[in-house]
Length: 113
Image (cartoon, rainbow, N blue to C red; front, side, top):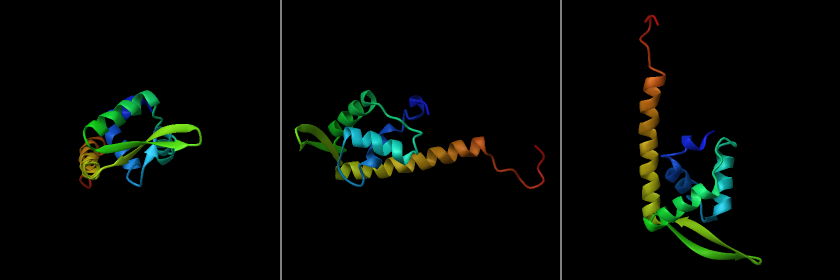
């Protein structure tokens, strides 16, 4: 799936995969890919600016963690981030309902196409 398809929904995707607990950047990319059965592939150049922006907005917090000799930044939801995720889910439901009503209109029985 094209990266453009994710535009406008990236915040919700990132917040959603962090709902279960802290993850580092590569684990976030992997979680999105696994949850979408490989349909969505996020790039580092896409998620890190978004993660930084979400952190500046107070929806995420981050901390450096060490894994062996490697240090990596782990991100987790704040309370505001959980509320933001709820709002993203509401917007997503409204969006899919509106698009669905256009792409797959309900036809009255006996209505010719």
